[in-house]
Image (cartoon, rainbow, N blue to C red; front, top):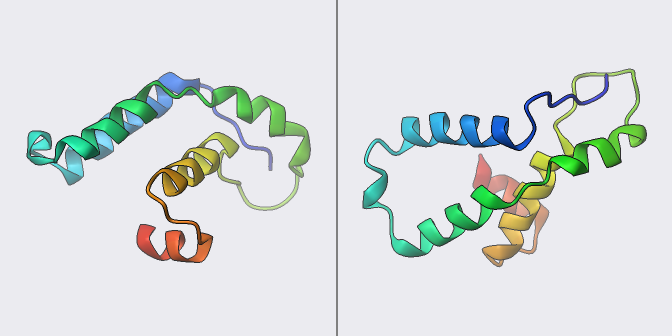
Length: 93
């Protein structure tokens, strides 16, 4: 199955806002350094990654994660100085 993101970057922003408010009902309690990361990734439009990577995916198998979401997660890990993918996955759980 090929990844599909019909909403592009706007869909990411909408999902972020709804999920963020579920986990942080008082977002202003977060430190300024966290807000710096949020702002950086808010404007980072990686939706073109989905169309570039489209041909690398098989039409068979389970629904994959969007390449833009995986890249965004990896960039955030590097920004937070987490260089091990295994450690990053453990932190995300």
